Amino acid sequence: MNDSPFQTLKIPELTGDLPQDVSTFLISNGFWKTAKHCREVAVEAREVALRVGANPDHAELAGWLHDVSVIYPVERRVETAQKLGLPILPEEQQHPMLIHQKLSVAMARDIFGVTEPSVLSAIGCHTTLRAHADLLDKVVFVADKLAWDQDGVAPFHVEMYAALEKSIDHAAFVYLEYLWARRDTLVVIHPWLADAYQDLFKQLFLA
Ligand SMILES: [Fe+2]
Ligand SMILES: [Fe+2]
Image 1: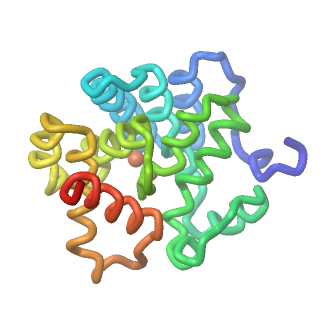
Image 2: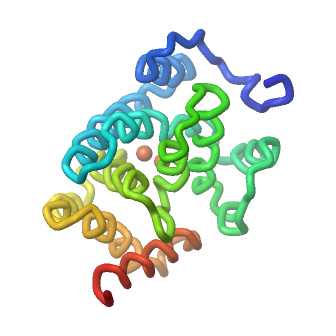
């Protein structure tokens, strides 16, 4: 990791207990609130996974790791992604908050040693989802929105829980539709989000 941008981070000695290691990492970098959010998403992701037949251990792991990269301030995310050789879309250049899902994948793999492809995939689209998302992608996407990290209760919370009774696709679509209805007010529309919206719309309503 000599030329890695990660070498400037405060990385505590890893114990192999991933929840413990992620918590310690975030807290020692001053991100208490993110540590709490990651724990809540991990708990929610396990519950959603058990409900829909996804791997609960993988869901929990992805929940713990999904936001580790928020330790990079928004203004350093493009530069960090470039140093890591990550592909950056024009929409991500324009709204660097969106790059954190890709940065979290690199950190999960290179700092925490995660190699499970489905876990890395779920971390990598937890904000936007993507077309043809697999089950774990949707589980972590939904869990992140149910464990809302903004003030108050998410405006779509009740509807999303109710939709989960039908299917994980219905639950994921609640948030996609919520954003889609507000797309004129978004800083950018990430192409993966647009693809996910159209993909799930077709599957749920046109099939
Ligand atoms: Fe996130
Ligand atoms: Fe999150």
